[in-house]
Length: 239
Image (tube, rainbow, N blue to C red; front, side):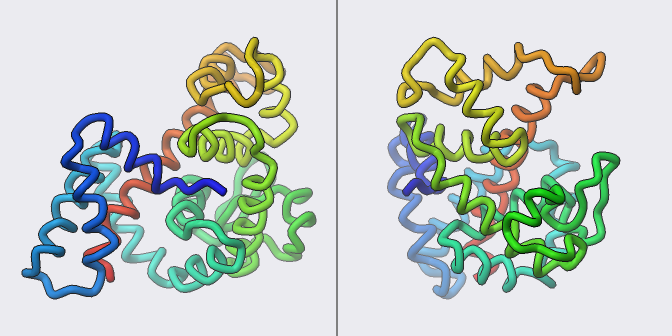
């Protein structure tokens, strides 16, 4: 099993060992009064994770506004669905934001729709009968992410594995596995950087003149990570 929280721990540790100590404050402070040492740790971690996201200030502000106006209505559903399928609710919610900005009635020209923007085949595979039902969509998305997680048997780090999962969510398991197999390495040795380079050079019949399908998948992975960082950063203040 892999856990996306390990991504931040490893990346922060690589930059500054002090951050490794601060990470523990995130888990210790969730129910403490505002002026305790633990809450100070939370404030520092909040600031670090917020800065770690590469989103613009405008994008962060929009995210915060939609979190208050849309997400809170469904937060318990995200938590319960994530717990049911043994995934992180922050990851589930980050995917949902990237897909629909937490709009349960979202639709696209490619016929995906709903909170998690599920395709018809994916919806059918996880028992979703109404993609515009936000609860069905959230639970269906959680099950699909859990199913994808169980298929990731390549890559060496937790960070790489979660990136492969997100890429599979966006481009499809078969396409990502084919890409992994096309890289001149043993599957277990392939990193996200390897796959990213491959996808950026991938040409398909679905590509537009200025935006390839591979680029779209890379962008999806990076954006979901950014939103995840924001959700993780807000854990202390929301608890």
